[in-house]
Length: 510
Image (spheres, rainbow, N blue to C red):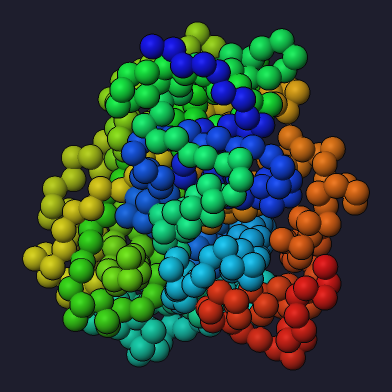
């Protein structure tokens, strides 16, 4: 049965943190907009936004060593870390704005202060961390970062990491107390709830998008099937955002826009070890990141994480990477094969040729036994008891495979917006750093697709109210960076390192 077409200004495909964030931004900037969110599952935040499906680090690039590679000359490049670091500041400002206006009642519903640590052992790794600390702590974005090579100090910061560690193997760690743990599932529910409480906004669950057709005049007809009743319907919209996580690539292909031609996806699965024992959990209050194994993807960087989910503390260790042909945790084993098109065969084959080591690594991870997983845990928690830990399946990540003239195809581990030339449709591909930079991604969509509205006579004043640092580089402006962080820390009830220059309210700069 075909229902009559519905008309709306904006269609958001996917009810995760990305669509929720963009939807709230758009409604704040233009209250008259009508917005329809479509989700194939029965609730929001069931895929990568779910707290158990992602690391919840509040990626500020404090502890993730893959963001600070060592250069051939021995120097440490912190440029990527700085970029991600200040992108997380945008999320903090966005959340603070919503709390200030009463859209979110209590920040403790989704964010908690948790120190971020990097931990290494072995002479080469200790030397690397020492150089990394020197480079990062010299920049104002990382002031307050601590470094030690004293096992006793590390034991105070993270007792489980040192408990039972023996031998003469040197160790080192850095710590920054301004880190956070974020429950993006809870946050998504808060954002979606706020959005649909506004006039002209709605979310439809059990709604599978089966087609995207560009009509004359530039509007899009989004064809939808109700997975419960089988009924089909269409929604006509001026703008479509495809924020469906791993499911974004097939939908981009359905749109037929030439800008998406040749893109492919490489799915990576993951498994955690999870401990819910309160006696163990109370001894560890940190996110402790190690170094990724050679040839492993960035999402597989091992870490021992304090998590606060639904008000309960747990420990997660992992993730153990693997391969599955699914693009979504609740997807189909046919997802990868159904995404293959004549235009992306060459990029897919090129990536397979150039990344054999990665493929071999992922296959090895799939074949790991329980004893292998526990041996990896033992590096970060020497006294771990297997009976205290259980497996927790993480979410799927689909990495971008881009067409490339010289090499045929490139495998990338970041995120990318791929949009129509008339700015009427845009898809978000990729994974890391993902949820933590949702506000940055939403602002990028605004700049890419709504540039004509970002003027002094339209949306710009309101955007600067939501994001006081918009248009200012927090990497370059040390005083304003301190002001922003002090202001958002107070609203979000998280830790901050304040100097006298940081005590003025951030709103005065806006």
